[in-house]
Each structure stands twice: as structure tokens, then as C-alpha cells.
Length: 336
Image (cartoon, rainbow, N blue to C red; front, side):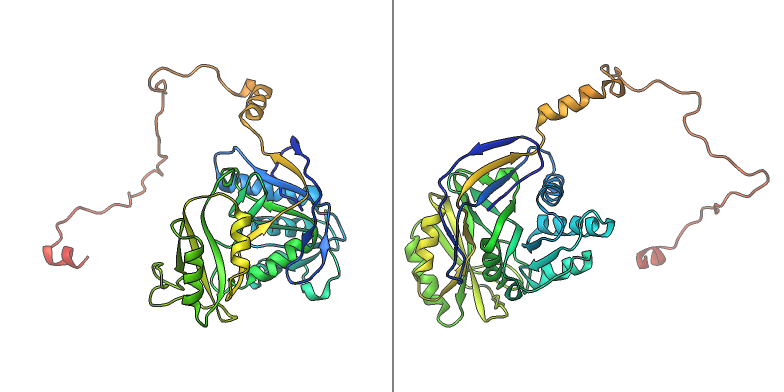
């Protein structure tokens, strides 16, 4: 499995080749390659776009079956993949969307699609991670699902784990040793409150359990309009008030609770390679290469005066498009 960002430099961290079990499939795969997105650019969108382009250019070749994950960066990668297909740089690609929303984005980009059930093998997959645990490479997805896409976590996890190689797109600041924030959990709507109480007891003192609303403000009960997915599930956000020591232990605790359908924790296992995006030193080298275009001296004070500061060319004998100023009655002014 894999996760990457744009850069030629690699930091290699060998880990033992453990097996990964596909959700609900009963099959195992081993010796995955894992890469984590890291970046030092100032804009999150800029670095995610770089990572998206690098992912497509580096890992996707003609004839592949591609798993299409959810998230902003994944949409950027899908759009760029569509442009590569239109130019002929890549051909004969089949995309397996993780959700209906991603299927719509892929269709608009011109990426041919098929269903996961019709495919025997997924060569490569990519998706967004909200946060990733540095030591174990365990990721959290689904913190910001779009309306109607909440059930896609089940299919997305299945697709990501079934892929021979996986890229997670993630902003560098969200790749950390101590993960914080929330973990989304899908639960059966029947007796959801009992399930929430069991989860609350499991993480007593470390987390709060809130039911996600469909609209309006969030709250423990989900407000007046709690979110109900198309499969009839509620979404609980387990909001940790302190850093999470081990995401894997959180996942293990949730897996055995009656009423929990699935959750947003995805464990990655295998050999690890971390790719970093261009750093400040890289930018310095670029400036040195084009130093003739960059002045070493800055003007002191304001720029020098010029002969013509501003000029408007007028047509001879043409009337200026202005009107005589006049007073406006207070009543009319109030109506405006």
C-alpha cells in the first residue's frame, strides 16, 4: 500500500511485511508498498495539487484498473487523470469509484468507470487521509463526508485494501506521531444511543461521543435533524479531548462493539517509503538558477517618480460621461 507527495527525494523506512485483510472479503495480501504525503509548501491546495499530479504521473500507466478514493485531493487527481486521458498520455484506464459522488466527479473528468463487484484485481488506488499516525501508518478517513456519502466508508476501505498499491494523499502537518481530533463511526440507528453509551464508556474521560447532524450545529444527540445515511445508519463522531495513543487499539475496541457497522480507521502495513515535496532548500536552488531575474537590492522608501504617473486618452470633442451633481430627497435615499 502507498502514500506519496511530489518530490524526487525518498526517505526509506523498512518494516516487516505483514498481511492486510480486505474488509469483508476474507482475503489477504502481503508485502505492500506504503508512501506518506509530506509537504512544506505554504498552501494546502498547492501541495495537494502537486501530490495529486505526482501520483498520476508516477504510479498510473495505461491499462490499469484504478481505485478512486474520496476527498479534495482525490478529486484533483481524478481531474488531472481526465486531462491525461484526453491528451492521450494515458489510455485504457478503468476507474472503480469509492462513492457516488466520486463516480460523478470521474464521469465529468472523462474517466471510464466500472463497479468493484465486476473487477477481479485493482492495480492501484488513491484516496485522502484526514490524519495519519506516523509510527504505525494508521489513517483516519471520513471526517468530512459529503451529504449522502457517509456509507461509502465501507466500500472505500474495501477498495483501498484490495489494491496492489495504495497512495494516501495527506497534508504534511496531518502526518504526526500523536493523532488528535475525531474518529467517525457508522452505527445501526436502532438503539444507537446504547451503542453510543458503550463507546463513551470505552473511552471514558478521553473522548466525547456526538451524533452527527444532517444540518445545523452538532451536538451529543445530533440536534433536531440527525444524519441518517442511505443504508439507515447513524454517524457518531468520537471526539478525543487528548492525543490518541494508538489508533489501532481504538479500532480494535470499536470492532467488537455490538451495533458498530464500521469506522474511519484504516490500518496500513508493509514496507514504507516517505516522499517529501520541495523544501525551502529546493526553492533556494531554483532562485539561484534564475538569479538574473531577481534583484539582490531593494529600493529604500517609495519607488522613483516617473514622467507620467497615470494618463487617460480622450477623444477630441467627445463629451465626458458624467452628470451634474444633484441632491437626493431623504425619502428616496432611505428607499435605496
